[in-house]
Length: 91
Image (cartoon, rainbow, N blue to C red; front, side, top):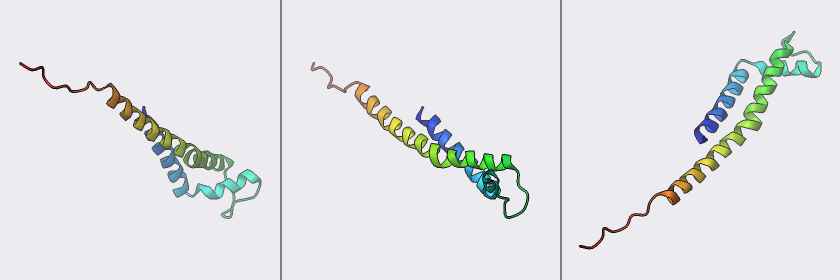
C-alpha cells in the first residue's frame, strides 16, 4: 500500500512538472479574466495547470508522508509478528 501511495505522489509531481515544462503556467491568467502575455489563451489549459499545481503542491506531499508513515508502521508490525528465535532444547 505504501508503494501505491508513493507512486501516486510521483505521478502527481510528474504531471505538474510536465505542465510546467510545457509553459502552461501563463495560461492560468485566463482564469482571472486577464489575457496571457503571449496573446490568446485556452481556459482549459489554465484549468489543467491549476489542477496539476494543486496535485503536485497540495496532494503529493500528503501522499508521500502517508507512504512513509505506513512503511514505518508496516516495518514495526513485521518485527512484532516475527517469531522469536529460541535456543534449541537441551539433549
